[in-house]
Length: 160
Image (cartoon, rainbow, N blue to C red; front, side, top):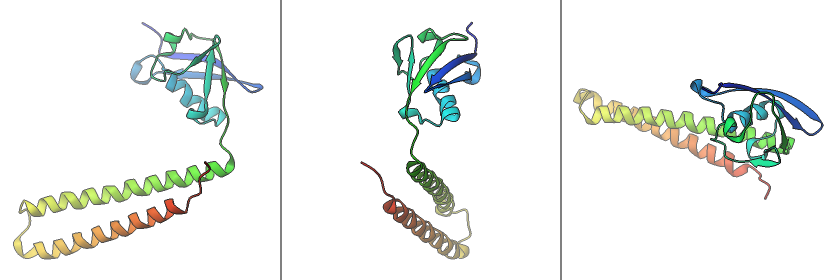
């Protein structure tokens, strides 16, 4: 059985990084695990990384490191470029927007669940009108939040 932890040396620019990669769920580490570790250490985003081992470019992210012949103590080279500070701030804005979209979507899922409960008659008839009014208000608030999110996305500047 192959080991599920490998330590390799990755040369990036003039620096060398010793990276220890552990596979998930007891499996062998895959190229994506190494790439994720390199994002943390170097700040180079995964799509901008080019990993080279024994003169070959490694591309299959779901392949195990051992399938490329990478063993304990092997040396790899990485070529890549970090994002500029402007790109980093825009990416942070995008991540914040993504979080707010997920939160608003969760609120709408709760509304959907409550509406399904109303539809199935889990609430007394005399209380249904009041509950529908509250649900209507929550849907309107969620709609307004989505509009604000769209305005935030619209205000972002991207480079071609």
